[in-house]
Amino acid sequence: MKLFTREELLPLARRQPEVLVDMFLALQQRLVELEQRVKELEGQVARNSSNSGKPPSTDGLAKPAPKSLRQKTGRRPGGQPGHPGHTLQPVAQPDHTRVHALDRCTCGECNGCSLRHQPVLAYEKRQVFELPQKPLEVTEHQAEIKRCPVSGCRVTTPFPAHVTAPAQYGPRFKAQMAYFSNDHFIPYQRLTRVCQDLYGQPLSEATVVSTNQRSYENLELFEQTVKTLLPQSPVNHCDESGLRVAGQLHWLHVVSNAHLTFYGVHPKRGSEAMNDLDIIPRCKNWIVHDHFKAYFTYEDCLHALCNEHHLRELKFLWEEEQEAWADELSRFLLEANQRRKPQGVLDQKAFKKIHAHYKAILAKGRRRHPGNRGAQSKAANLLDRLEDYDLCVLAFLVHPEVPFTNNQGERDIRMEKGRQKISGCFRTLPGAKVFARVRGYISTCRKQGRNILNELENAILDRPFIPSQPIRAP
Image: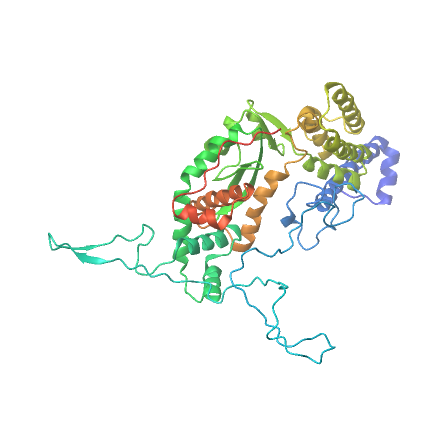
C-alpha cells in the first residue's frame, strides 16, 4: 500500500473526497486485522502448561509460578489427624542381634562399681537397618554324575530349569535390572556402571536387553488378560502422547483405571490406532478423556470430559483476556466438585437446577462470542465444546464412578515424557513395545499392592501375576 504525504493528500481530498474515504476505511479495516493478529500472538506467548493443554516441557526456562487450581481447605500442610504415616518401625525378628554388656555402673553414686555378676533386668532395644556387606551372593549348583550299574552309562542329575550356563545372573538380579530399566528409566550404559558400583560385577547391555525381551515374551498372557478386563470395568481413563521411535513420531496410548494399566505403541494417534489396540471399541461403560475427537467415534461407550483441561483454558481466558464468564464457570465447576465430595451425586431435581446455572453462565459467554462455526476465537471454540457436550462435562455430578478429571490417565502416561528425557528415544519399534508391555505390568502390580521385584522375578521365571476380574465401583 502506497503511503501519501500531507501535501499530496490535501489536493486529492478537494478533487476526489470519496477516494480518501475509501482509503480511510481500508486502513481502518487493516488496523482491526492487525490488532486481532497481535492479540492472537500475545495469546500464544501467554499460554503455558498452567493455563492451557500445553505440556510442561514446552515452558522452557521461563516457567510460570506454581498456582494450584484447588481451593483452600483451611487444613494445615502435611499429614492430617488419623493419617497412619510411614515412619521406620522395628521388626519382630531382626537378622542379627548384638548385645552391649554393662560392666560398670554409671549411676554416679557408687564410684563405678562392677556389675559383671549382676543379673540382667531387661534390654533397651534399638534397630539399625543397613545393607549387607556383600549384596551379591553366588550359589554353585553341582549336579552329581554317576554310572549306571546295568548299562555302564554315565548319568547326570538335571539342573534347575533356570540354571542354563556355567556362570549367569539369577532371576532376582535380572528382575532388579528390569526394574531399574523400566521403572526408573536408567539407560543401558549407565545401568552397567550401576551394577559395577553396587555389586562389583560387570554387566553387559545385552544382558539387560535379553532380560527385558524375556519379560516381554512371558507377559503375553498378562497383557491379553488386561485387554479383556479393561472393557468390563465401570470407568476407564484414556490418553495418548507423542513418542519418538527410530527417529519418527509414534504415539503411546494408555487405557487405565485404579487397578489396571495398558500401554500400546502405534504410528497413529486416532481411531486407526484405537481399533488396532482393540480396547476402546469394546468398552461399554464410561471412558474419561480430553475431548480428542477420535474418542467420540465410539458410540457404544459413555463419554466424560476432563474438567482439569477446562479449568486451564478458563484460567487463560480470565487472566489474559478478562473474560468474566470464564472465571465464573471455573469457580462453578470447582465448587460443584467440592460439594459432591461430602454430599455425593445429585438427584434429578438438583441436577436440573445446577444444569440451568451452568447454561446461564455459558449464555453470558455466548453474548460476547456469538460464534459462526467457522474460523473463530479460542473462547468461541471452548463455548461450542461446553455447550455441545454439557452432559459429558457434568457427568461427575450424576454418576458416582465418574471422576472430575482425567488425572488417572495423565499420571499413567506422564512417565513416558520422563523416560524420553532420561533415556532418549527408542531405536526400534519392537523395543518400544517391549517397554510398553513391561511398564504396564509394573504399573498394574503397583496399583494392586504387589511387590514389584517379586513380580518381575516371577515374570522372568514365566509365572507372572495375572489380574483377576475388574473391581466394580460402589
